[in-house]
Image 1 (cartoon, rainbow, N blue to C red):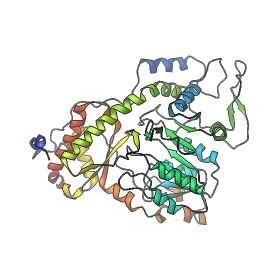
Image 2 (spheres, one colour):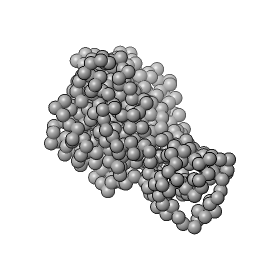
Image 3 (spheres, rainbow, N blue to C red):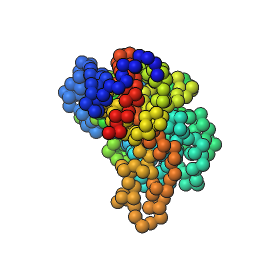
Image 4 (tube, helix red, strand yellow):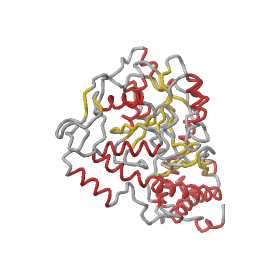
Length: 433
């Protein structure tokens, strides 16, 4: 460890009552400005707050955001939704996932990836991840394919991108559609293309903490006209936009009724926020990426704190949760959550733990669902305990994350983060008390 951290030795940790490293506020998130507020006021006085409202002669913000987001990602179609979960739902329904089918899902990801599968009556097959990226292993996914596999749901997470070359090959080889969950990867690029454009459908979340947010919300993008039409129908109770504007005061949605749809629509308020904040996304992503790379350098000097590997095919990085792995032997083999709590105290910042693997995640309870017979064959297929996820389990024991807002500052913020890690490492023995 370099000498710049020598003054931190034998200092009382903040969690033990000492002075924290970080005493200034962190950058705000979510962000908004006068233009954001102006668009919200425009919606407020428009007399139309939802796509199901009556046509008022103006182009909906929902349609304007859909056009802007599809153009941003380089695809022709986008269907905004009420959440990232509902974006995944309409994606699976559009490609024809049916009751009893299987969908490959990473064993280490947010619970909605699996629960969206069970919500349509299908079975999540939990697949282990790669140790260096924590994204789903293409090799493990191939081994998990069965005659019942109807889709592969690959998730880009922890400032990384899954091996899209391998997953595209696997999809083409097997004929199984690929869905990309890009909830943590708005703006990330792989070999010059935005993520979400390699599979049949790319699904995004715009929940409060995401790098593009409207509090809640989501979107699904595709290059397939048929899938676009089906997703429109599934998210709006079987309705779609009319080809031509209706008379003033009439519905802009027409009733197709060709699917059993749901109400999963984005509101006009949310769409207006997203339309504005999308114009800031690339600049904010570049700021985060530069600060992340600086932190990588500082952590290498400290030692025993290793960021996940960044794939060389990633041209533009989206940092949502920056994940590092600790060499626990250098921290007295203390529990990772104790070390996380100590780091949080030094930084005056809440930091999410790494998600619990889905085979031991308290939020994933398919056997408690009222949709399934708890005594039948389906219950056996849904039991998360039947899956073996050693790499995902190891990550839970060794890794912690930092939220993306800390990288929207400058060098001072990054140096405080590094100093907090160094202080915890140099004084971990006091945590034994």
